Image (tube, rainbow, N blue to C red; front, side, top):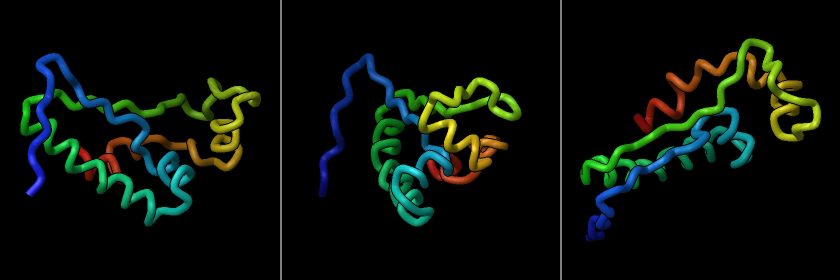
Length: 99
């Protein structure tokens, strides 16, 4: 049985960009994105069990993503593909498995 990691007293776990469109683009498909999210769960569970704060960071843009420059290769591609039309998925989808 694996031992529970020891957490320093002034720690927090930061979970960044666990959003459908980011995970899918980075892992290649929806199934791999879900697997990546599931693999984060033991670490999140361990942090919570040790009373370590878990902080979620998510990409958010206003409607139409006017903040995204055409020079930003990653996010301009998402914008052009319509993948960041509605980022309300941060309240559902894969993030919901992590909360």
